[in-house]
Image (cartoon, one colour):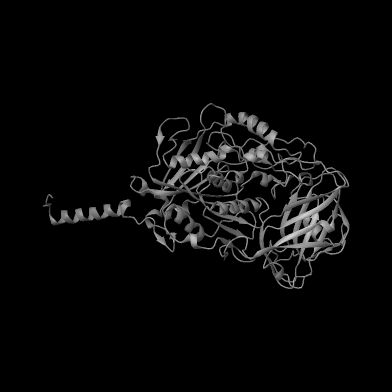
Length: 613
């Protein structure tokens, strides 16, 4: 080795330079910095002004805008500066969305008119307005950056097909919306091409990542990670979908019945298409003609609500054979926009498949991420591949009534392992209130309700006397009752017309609308069904007026503790003002009480229902 012969000052300068250089090199950073199984903030990654931000277009293997070229997805990257020399390779947290570049603005006068006779062609819908695209390069979104970049993750965003600066067409759950994030993950793993411009050939490589990708997002943005996971793409290690749509049929239909998402009466897949179609103005006419006015117009079936090939393509619960991404599912039991069955059925399937999975449920409405600690442990385990024991934690985390969302109660699993089905029978009482009993009563005969969409379900639940619903109540509970799982009903009915809506709510009475009322106080869960689809979701069969049929279906999953002193009520009516089509009032539904039952999953079963016959 050559001996250094400089002065003492030169020696000190050289030592200082070596030390400074060493501390600036990524190899000296402790990445990840782990404490209690979670990735901690790394001081060198904290300053957003030092982060590197850049954008690119990833090429897919599909062409949905008809220009003869593979669609390219617009992508933005935010990463620590220390990744620039290629020595430090970090995992990625990725969110994709159709919403980043703007959506349709009010007035929302392009929804479907729900005043429609069942089994008849719907009124013509007005197309949505042109969307003025917003957003500047290279930032698509800042979501997740302040949380995850300081902890040693790279954050990636992309816009969905036909939105923002991405090529293609929106399809509202079509195959291209699963393949688009797959292409981005392939690019992150060196299997797809990225380019500096939308139509150029200068390539961009993701030299700064180890290829491990986690995805997250809420609602539509929660559907996209789930859809990507169904492709089985290598590199997608973990996802945390929040209130995800897993089947667009379950989002816009219910057991053969045309049903709107809560808060968006008259919405359907083509409405959502118009709401997000912010892509290239020159491609919009082709996209509208091909997708909205072609494929969607032919497949929606707002006349009957039947399941068909259009909905099957958008049903990702049937496409999970290649699924392997560890999944922390999050949802709310009172989400009446994306119904809870979307996450529950996916979680049930993941358990059957042996895919690492966990659920977090809270008692609020649409949205709501798991606590940061849980998300951090999940991503740390599967993206940094740190053995932090997350697999040994309880599988179910449920926020109890009146608890904070950051403080869920852990359970062995969901539904509660001690829950077992308890069947209730009906006793007569219309037009006032009948009863729910555990024993089969003597013949109770039939009771009739008259459909009228003018009355909301909450008004019908509170009414002392009305012929527009039937309601059956338990005695006052002598102790609290813990419901955990999927309630179901078997309703034997006759209709005065060939088609009818059927709505069932499970309620808790007396109704509480006081200052301290909670979302869990009144409505326990709900369900909707088309009696015309009693035998098949794919084929409606008209009802013979006056003839009795049995309709069996599940209500939405729930986990709720009903306090003592309350009464559990089974509310049966026809058209639901907030969710269903509105046929002309007057249809009569006659319920055979002796052959109609409610089954509840009750923790500790019948033993928990002390004092009830």
